[in-house]
Length: 389
Image 1 (spheres, rainbow, N blue to C red):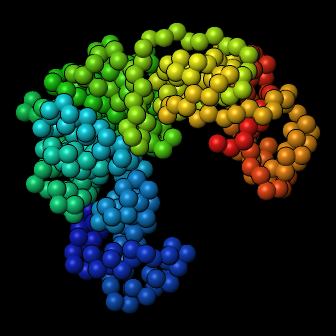
Image 2 (cartoon, rainbow, N blue to C red; image 1 turned 90 degrees about the vertical axis):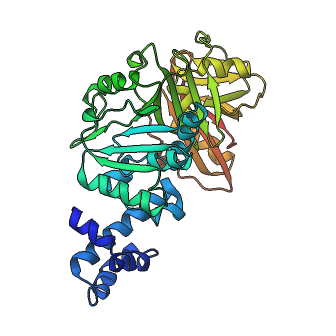
Image 3 (cartoon, rainbow, N blue to C red; image 1 turned 180 degrees about the vertical axis):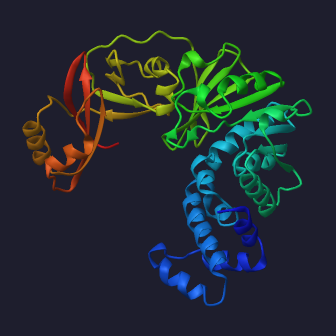
């Protein structure tokens, strides 16, 4: 989509087409396009169909009410923060007393929208002209243009001193896909850190796989999951330097690191606990183990075992019903005996592919089960069967 095509979508005719395409079936797109082109310019119909597809994809992140009023680019849908995560982060800014934020690398404006809804005035900056226009249109569409100023500029040229806080979301995708080196972000993480240090408060959104050694000593590091999926890591400045936390949404529920040493591995007990991904990424497995009175199954694996059940929001508990050395015939026989027709396979420290294992089991039956493939005290490829929680 180019700027002219996007501008056409903002006209009355473009809005009419987008409304008409809200519930369109992608499988019928050719017939739909043919029908609409009888009364509307072909270029506008193509742009509207493309936008309709993006809106359907965006529902998962923004919800239907917002997604069908907003505008997107393909990269914008892919890289935008999920609305629940952006709202949580905006709430933290508001709790700090922040009233204005310079949102650098704003993309299509998802974070700016959340900040504005928290009552915070936002300068949203992106260097791509089309992306900036989309962000501006989104603020207008959601009735937030009075709080959101969008500027097309290089973020390195922006004077952030008039603002209470800085938020930076560097681009972590390039022409070849995801970028894993923080210094290859655009702008680099080192630049973002220096920009953060110029403000009283700041947050940097980074990939959840960032090495812990890359976290500056004067930053707080927070890993956030939503519905069990790890979404991002955030470096906070002006809050609690050196603190490490895992935050689970919805909630929020936050586990703060206490600097505990890794627990020793021990015998497999009656229960297995699978920590939330944010807990694993933040290296706070020891804190969960202490909560449940547990120990590691293996010193290199983030599974906890315990003899008693102690529910915790930071891990899913499974009761262990069987523990067997890994073998396809033995596992298949056990699952047939238990009449398991629906199998969930989880693994850590095993080379076995879950999809392949399910295919080879050839299951049938009314029951469901979860199988964990993991090392146990250094032994590889053992299968522990547990009922689904």
